Length: 259
Image (cartoon, rainbow, N blue to C red; front, top):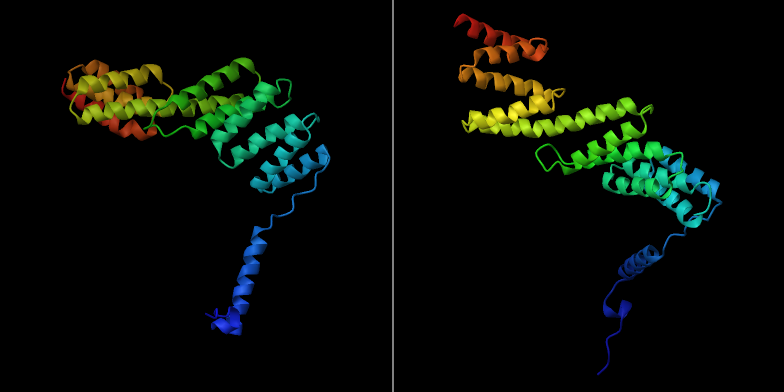
């Protein structure tokens, strides 16, 4: 039996053949790998990577800093490249990878001039990658430990105020978790259980925003329990808070009018 012809004789028009050939050529071109960047001396490689970083071309920056580390492991730029590799992941908001890279620098380049800054950014990466207040706060606690350690190790650091603000932010997150638990017990009409949470916040996280609201709810519970003097003390502590002044002032007047 005679085989059918392929191509034009198989019923394809000239235009269809051209389209097929063009498509195949595109596919073949896509299979050809792009030429790699030419290997440069360590300093030039590092400068090129920094240029990518400054222009927010973070994927290229990652590749550039990695090239310094892999191709020039004994150069004076290797710890610089490791630090900026970590900073690039931080800029990309890939905080989990940033932690890994900062920790690698801290453990393997202890004499680097970037150690102090790496410790700071590692702690901030932990905070940034930690879940919200309604989830497990293990990473938040780890971040606080690293930040406390930083203040002990670098008492005169230029990052001191930033570290203190990060600690406050982290403690606010922990306090918020306790606050919401207390409010839940209030909704469940279990004031004694709620009071334990609010009192814990006031005593453990007194500097946080959550402590302010905890005082308000705790005062309300004391009022219901006829512990009016304790309630008034807490309400008065909130009089200097603009957002609470009117509300607590009314509560104080209500209590005093019933005496």
